[in-house]
Length: 241
Ligand code: NAD
Ligand code: ZN
Image 1 (cartoon, protein in one colour):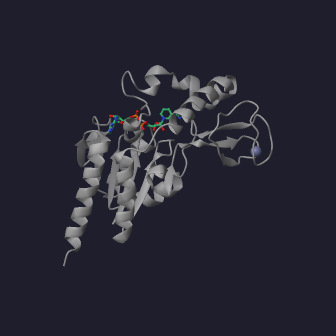
Image 2: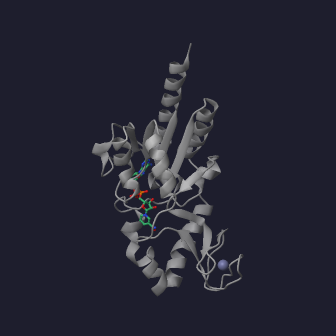
Image 3: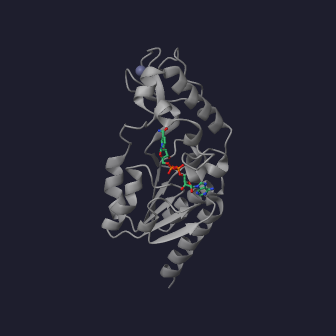
């Protein structure tokens, strides 16, 4: 059994990290993405863009994984023990899946705790603020570091692996994502085209909710552990002698 899971900001909401589009509280309700999350913004106002990501990085360091992240990490292990496989793709730039114990997480929108050098392209672990005088650990260049995140107008990461693995899955599950940002919002349609059953767990129906065969609405910290238990129980029942 190969299960392909896509997570979005909703899975980290109960860890205290803001989602993007939720009215009032979403990050983009308070900040203008075009002023902060584009290559052009970084070119024109680097200090302001760095300050936004420095703030989010420090915020992340005080957050902890919640029961949804923990359940997915246990679920990956449990599937593996049953000769199954979990592909975990996240749009989140936090490291809460990893801290919960998940390995091999594909961060298609990059990672907040990494910096990338515009000069030598090296990607290095980075937990401090990035400043205009920060030095690249790989090439020594000063002032060429940017957050290793994918901005609007840039190409997400791992799209080749995703294109290869999604059609081979036995089940596609989207968790806590509004289905508004492509290409991730298109994964459900790709899955359907290849006959892969689709399911969503969300607080509210996603923009593309009609494309899911099944949906569970509720906070991820409840709905995700319950879903994992149901799938494992179903798997075990189908394998019972
Ligand atoms: P989103 O904010 O658009 O949607 C969050 C979803 O989570 C909503 O469907 C909401 O109902 C749900 N949700 C909220 N609380 C929940 C809870 N407790 N349990 C379960 N679900 C909950 O976030 P998204 O779909 O992840 O956004 C798409 C992606 O677009 C983002 O992850 C981000 O990577 C990317 N993006 C990036 C930038 C950038 O700075 N590069 C800017 C905007 C969007
Ligand atoms: Zn460098």
